[in-house]
Image 1 (tube, rainbow, N blue to C red):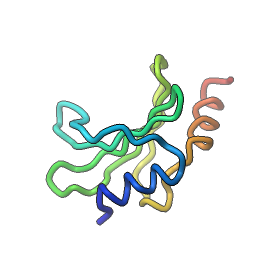
Image 2: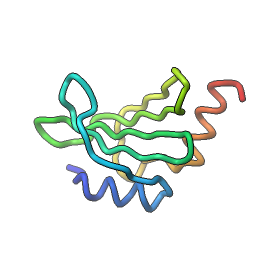
Image 3: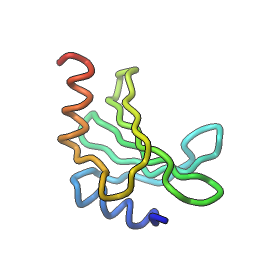
Length: 92
């Protein structure tokens, strides 16, 4: 199981600004939130087990969201990869 501390450290190492850990929605899942300029990344954790469930990338003000199933800390995206994927989706 990936610890939330390890996830936060990995996100910071990759260049994300880790802002806080909070409830991620009505389901009560916990989340670790990262930011890079207008881009946001959310790692959702199962509230019962504390295990990571998914990674969500988004751009502030953009309704489009790119979601990937969780594949472990070693596969967390860098901000550059998130920007590239979101930009290619939007046709920028």
